Image (tube, rainbow, N blue to C red; front, side, top):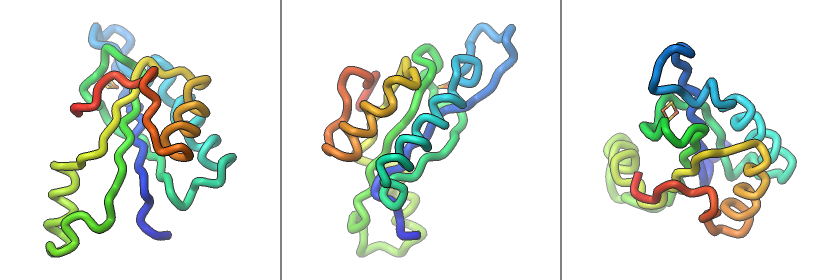
Length: 129
Ligand code: FES
């Protein structure tokens, strides 16, 4: 598989129910993750969009949360691959953080973000992550 154009990181961090900080897992993160996978498959975007579970994205109050990164494959192409990967992680210019997600939001995000190429503002909680 070629490198995907987009990566979706769905926070599935789990904490004890007694933890006052809460967590995405207890807010239905697995359903969000599965909804992304199902919609990506339905729209036949599997070669362009990769969906992964992730740890805490540090926006716990907005659970459930997903981070979408767009990879520019030519970015830093003049650097050695190892350094390029590290730089991309640090400086990813196209990152969109979605929060307060429900499974019903996912088809709208997939359509807007991955098909039309525009982030879905209604579900965004920040662009500065
Ligand atoms: S537990 Fe999901 S963002 Fe912190």
